[in-house]
Amino acid sequence: MSGRDDLVKLLSNLLQIDTSNPPGNESNAAGFLRDWLSERGIKSEIVEFEKGRANLVSRIKGSGEGPSLLLLSHTDVVPADPARWKIPPFSGTVKDGYVWGRGALDMKSMVAVETMIYSEMIDRELKGDLVLAATADEEKGGSGIKHILEKALEKITANYVINEGGGEGILTKKGWLFNIQTAERGVFWYRVRTNGSPAHGSVPGLGVNAIDRMRPLLNRISEFKGVSKRVEPSWRYVESLLKMMELADEEVSINNIEILLDRLAEIDKGLGESSKAMLRVTMTPTVIQGGVKENVVPYECTLTVDCRVPPGYSKESVKRMIRDLFQGLEYELEFIQESEPTVSPVDTPLYRTIESSLLKEVPSARLEPTTMTGGTDSRYFRRIGIPAYGFQPLMIEGNYYDWSRMVHGDNERISINNLVFCYKVLKQVVESFMLK
Ligand SMILES: [Zn+2]
Image (cartoon, rainbow, N blue to C red; front, side):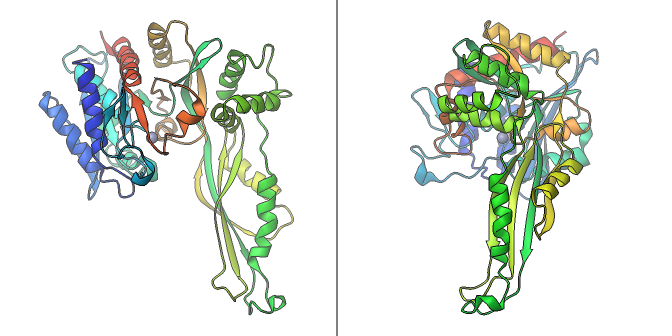
């Protein structure tokens, strides 16, 4: 690395570009990266797909003797409310060993690390193509990545992808446990509607109240507590976590998993709750709308549910599950988003390189694959048969719960130590995997 300071500066500059999505304005970040690369003699391309919204792509040709690799990231961030922050969220302030700003973790630090590593590979002899892509709109629909995949796949296609969504190291009683995201849960957002008939609010018996009709559906969702399933890849991770936290000494089984996960949640709510979500179907009511006026019996009510399912569930099985859940009730069902779970294989040369590179930095660490509870752009690649791994290596400082709440929360920041750690591990990965 040309220096730790260069990396910090690159991140700080990126954080100063407000790419809150909506509206995004990612073209500003793409333009900045293009100029940064160009100052180092590297050509890149800006692909604008809407006014103010652009992806940046660049490719270094390899000899073709080995596989190609895409370093993927997104430049947009979720909005931040400055009133809730100790330091202005778009200041990129460097203070007390931390770089502060919206996107410091999700995921401008990775944008900075990948761009830095990419720039350092320009004069090296690579076995395969190395591709850099910093895309727009990941936080709100993924129109950036979809645009490239549909209109210009040849610009970013590669045999493997490294992206966000994993790489977190937890310090347990038995050393560091890192995860690598090799799967994502399926996303099935749905809306249920109940119908009634209007009447004067003063004589409710003359109408049929649609909000009343929604109540039993809402109750069933509240009662729905998915049970943990023995699903890979995350079962092995959760099992390792429980053992390394000394919560379980012998076999973790489907019979004792719930108790163990509750115990884990008592120690660290973040670890416990995310482990539960990895292994289960979750249904979260997120939006409810009904009624038009204070004195009119509501004739329509809708409820939106964020339903996520672990690997193994198909669209058909989700539909069946919802039918069973609401059996005997009257409602209309509509899916707003349907996206089945995606999984990448773990027995690949890149996976092994990631593992060995991590072990060089942290010799006693253990690496296990996980399912991400939410979603990233990796799913689009997995669907077209390209293995994608979420691996943004970071050593979690302190409690996982506090740490995870910075992502999309307040006072997001990354320690310079972690920024450098992320760089070192990923640089090792790229060099081991790509160099002749
Ligand atoms: Zn992200």
